[in-house]
Figure (cartoon, rainbow, N blue to C red):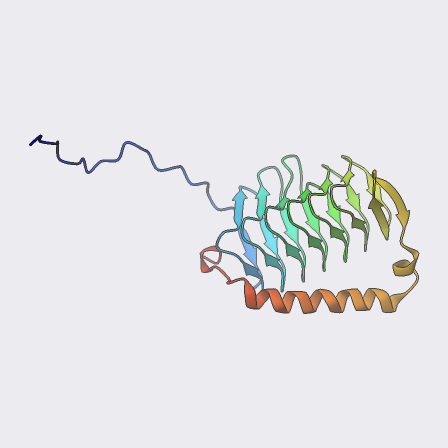
Length: 192
């Protein structure tokens, strides 16, 4: 019979340092997943009915981040800029894996799956950045611009010229948010 030393009560692995929580202002009707990552030292504001999915990252290391009302930030999406503020308008969808470092994104816009919006870019209202497309640093897109294919651009005149289409889009956004509120539990850890 061999004798083994008694197990040590000390662990050799140090606990990973936790980043301090940034100054947060979260609307009471916003839903922030427990597994969302919210880090930085600058203020972060999240608006009414906005949904932050698990594994989405909001980073305010270099500037404040403001996310408007009725927005969604999906899994593995990253919002924040190490060099300045980021302002996301109302009703914006930031889809899975998208990276948004823009100075601003206008109301009703969609940043689709794994699309990239560079530092300092200004995105107009009701723009659509298609999957895997890129908006370069400091680029400005007028309202209703669609970026598609090999980063080609066009103006979506159907949305631009028809308030009923914009209203239908906004109504669809609210329906999606109401469903997501039932599916994604809100984490009290972000409220303290």
